[in-house]
Length: 220
Image (cartoon, rainbow, N blue to C red; front, top):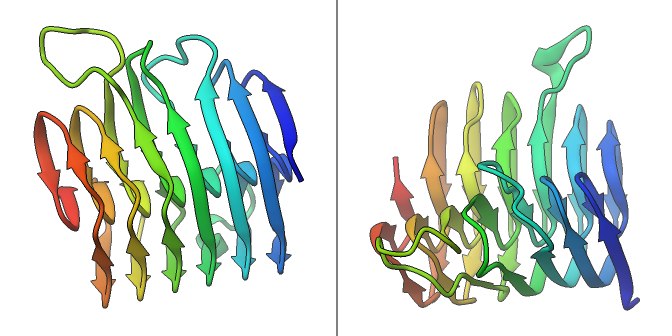
């Protein structure tokens, strides 16, 4: 509890990078301060057959310097995608019955992709079930006249959904506030490719931004 992680890219209280791993009945709390990309409350970057079940994270994630165009900060996981291997089609992300709270805070840099649960989903197949978040995502600059502090592709559950095949989000909810720039919503900020299935999900999040905002999906 009350961990403090400070570094560059691939940061998480439970691990920076994790491949073919399963986490069950885990909890994490503390602060993650990153100077790069792919940071989260539990695991910064995930690959292979990766799953989390009955896990909670109460975290505060922030940037110490400009990470560039790919921010990917999440309450639970930052980035989940195929990063190499003999049989890439077997890769799958599964998140079940997980909850996050805390903050993702950035008001100094122009960044991309953040979420209460997982920032970026790029696995061939993904299932996110019975997950919830009350995490607040804060970016103080929302106007077009300010080039700093812009967050986009931000969601209560998923920031960017870009599976090769399909992503299913079921029985999930978000209640945290989202103060961003564009392409943001209570469940999925941006859907890029593949099939996105959302079932029995809702959001009570307050969303403040400039364009591409939605209650469930920001842009698809």
